[in-house]
Structure formats: C-alpha cells, structure tokens
Image 1 (cartoon, helix red, strand yellow):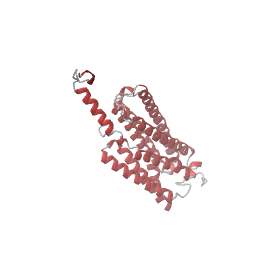
Image 2 (cartoon, one colour):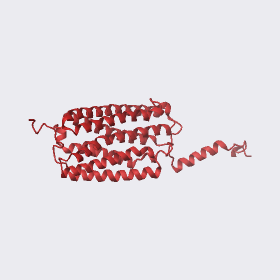
Image 3 (cartoon, one colour):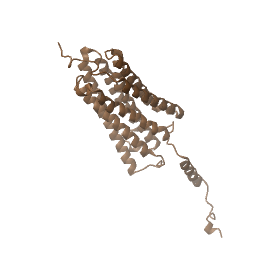
Image 4 (cartoon, helix red, strand yellow):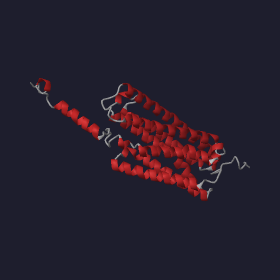
Length: 291
C-alpha cells in the first residue's frame, strides 16, 4: 500500500478561503473594469484578457469551495484547470497588442516576422500550449493517470516558456530597430506601451517557470505542500498583470482600427502641418519682402 505522504492527494493542505476570496474579488472587479473599458472603446482585440480574468475569478471561487470540502473533486478541477490556463489568454492578448503597435507605427519592416503572421504565429503556439495544459490537467483528475498528466502539463508549460521567450526576443528586436530608425508616427507614445508589454510578459514568464518547477516536483513536492508560493508567484503576479493593463490600457494608445491615438496638442500640430503643406506661399508673403 502506498504511503499517504507520497500517494496522490487533491490538496496537501486546506485551501485558505480568505486568500482565495480576496483574489476572487480582485480579479472580478478588475475584469469588470476591463470589460467596461473594452466595450466603451470597442477594443475587441482585448477580449482574451477579459476571458482570462473570468477564469481567474471562477478558479479562486473554486478554491473557496475547496476550503469547505477539500476532498470534493469538482471544485478542485475547477480551480486547478482554470488557474493553470488563464495566463495563456493574457499572453495571447499581449501578442495581439504588439501587432497593433507595429501596424499603428507603420513599422512592419522592423518586425522579424511578417506582420500578417506575427500575431497568428504566437497565438497558434499559445493555443497549442493551452490545450496541452488542459489535457494534462484533465489527466491529473484521475488517480491512475496523475503522473502522465503532470508530465503533459510540464511539457505544455515548458513550451509556453520557450514560446514566450521567443516573443519577448521578437518584441525586443522590433523595439531596438525602432529606436535606431524611428518612423514618421513618432507622436505615438509607443515606448511606454512597449514597457508595459515587457513588464506583463516578464510576470507571466516568471509565473510559468514557477509552475514548471511546481509540477516537476510532483504532487508531494515542496511547492505543492505550501499554498503561500502559489499566491506569491501566481495570484499576485497575474493580479499585477491585469492591474497594469487597467492603468495602461492599450485603448489609451491605440484606436479600435489599430491607428495610434493623438492628444489634443498633437492633433492641432498635425492640422497645422497639413494646412502648411496645402496652402500656397505667395512670393510676397514674407514680411521682410513686403516693402
């Protein structure tokens, strides 16, 4: 008979209802704000972030339910699967936003991947990782396939880390080339939005590495036995990602059609420049030659 400390258990602790409840509320409020902002600005490309926020919310509700019945399989599956795959949707949103930035700047020539394929390329990899993690999470719900499920999840997470690293590299190359040879649409504050993407990407990457180590250690590993690490390296980081995009929402920089947003001063400057290029200059319009 297997030792209780090494055989599969849904939880190696009793999940904290307070911690899970707090993060469920935080993600819910953040998701509501994101939804309102997206509908108000018609930034439909941000929908994946909203779905990810809903998954995080329901996932932590599942942990609240598990507090009252730690041996119930339903709430365990709910929280395990949703919290595992939700960040993949955050990553997909970041891929889309980078493509929008490049299009708004008319800087397709600076991307190492053709713009028509950039978002599609990384999203396809993200979807593959998503389904690997979902499949692995499903296998882990059966005691007879726990080990296989863990291996599949680790494989999906490793793939996500590598794929995401490739995206950060592609974004960095684009950023460097833009700094060397800026485009005519330099009025857009694209650098700030790029730094937001870097920050969000780094947090998702750290979270994914944590999950790789967590699942690689197994169900009876150090990280699986201590709930606090999941909150530090997953809940807090994913909350920070959503909060970051609440503060620096891409709709503040990009219009719904992918063009860049200009402030009133920039719009007036642009109108003045257009007027100056369309109005003919009379040879005696120079005050020094008037008399």
